[in-house]
Length: 101
Image (tube, rainbow, N blue to C red; front, side, top):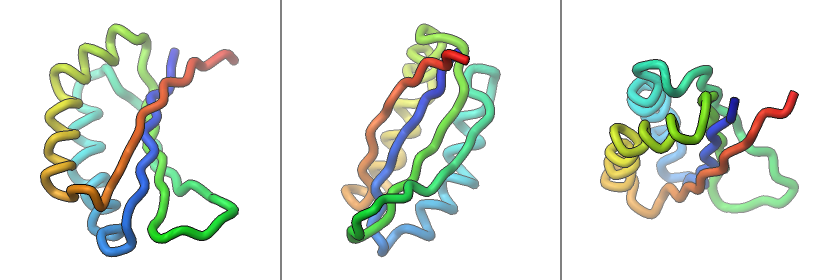
């Protein structure tokens, strides 16, 4: 079992709109089907102050092949939609975590 994590840095000007969009559009669309489950949205607590805010969005996924298939079928389109809507005001990177215990 894995955790698929995306960390986003969000400019203050779109923070509320982006968070609402994640909750109303991205998370429900990403979690359709059985590939991604247990969505969890977190605020990243950083010791330094920066413009904007960092958020972490996590899903559980059974294996890497399932994640790759999901990305080809849904994830790439969702990412494209996000970039079109928010441009460079939201920047994200993905991390895949293997659950050991």
